[in-house]
Length: 241
Ligand code: 4GY
Image (cartoon, rainbow, N blue to C red):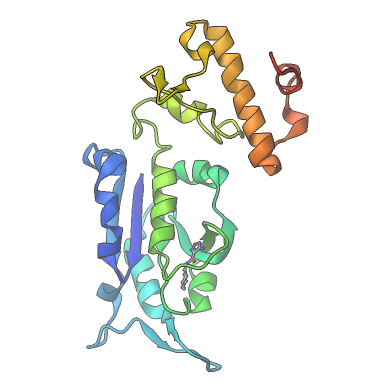
């Protein structure tokens, strides 16, 4: 998969060089390039913003550099890349969106700054707006990194163990169960006995029940009651299942 990120602050995307994604890049599983929007200006001052039509405080990002960047990054042949813009006005980015985007061969992610981006960028380039949550950041770069990280880790091979990607939170539509490692007792706090038992079926049931309980207690909005099977209902009913 190829991902191009267009920004006036390429340094802000440096974290993508390291960690899991850094390795995936090095191994050729995902090709991420950070592109400087100012390279697509044609004036002496490399200007990317201008005053807002209609007045008001703050600057608006000009359309021309975004058009030039997307046109330069779009291959002549083959399927058109999906072009995203991170903004609070967008579709909520969630695990379903990450799964959908991880199947694309090529994404272009545009990052806004200042008061926002000229609306013709959205209209004229077929841009899809995505929001990572209901709060306002100082720029789109952090949101772009969130989207790229959550998307790229779903590409087969990017994260070491495929089973861990499937088992964890949200792949199942539920919150994750609690995790423990050694020692079995730490400052008087014990690891639940069942996890030390070696009884795989009992461990599976315990984890599933923890997932269901935690989801019910913390994020009831995520629980699809209709999708719960008889075992799940029983696990939520009995205290000792
Ligand atoms: N929330 N989700 C978000 C954001 C900052 C002004 C446009 C968000 O995705 N992006 O808050 N972005 C704004 C800042 C220009 C982007």
